[in-house]
Length: 145
Image (tube, rainbow, N blue to C red; front, side, top):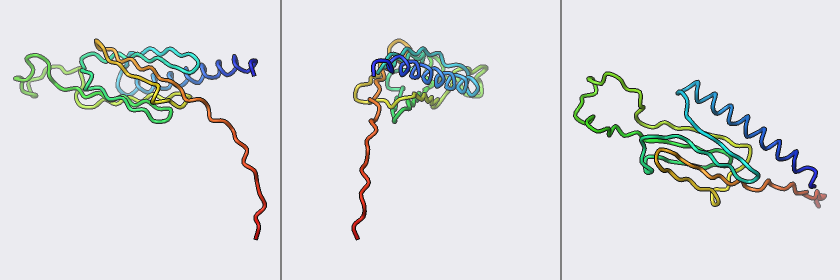
């Protein structure tokens, strides 16, 4: 079994990289670039995303099987902006409302061993993978009538 570990690790790395490339390309095509870095090792992935201008309570992270959904609520609370009428806005590059992001991994995520922290505009996700499901033989029996 030891000889399979390097091949399994390489497959994991390849699948992870392909998933991230697809995620990055899709994101760039739809809403511009989201700066993120991902590091991985057997059983764990570290994701860091730049999300400046949010408070921790404005960031929502949901885990489902192999998918991470990240939602942000951008409140228009910039200093001095409350008194400006919307029609007087000359340039708006920062989004308003929800801006969901989705990231898929080639493994199921263990929500009980994963964590999310937000500090100084950086969201850090530590995602632990669930062990792969073992193949189990199911005995076939003859039906008695």
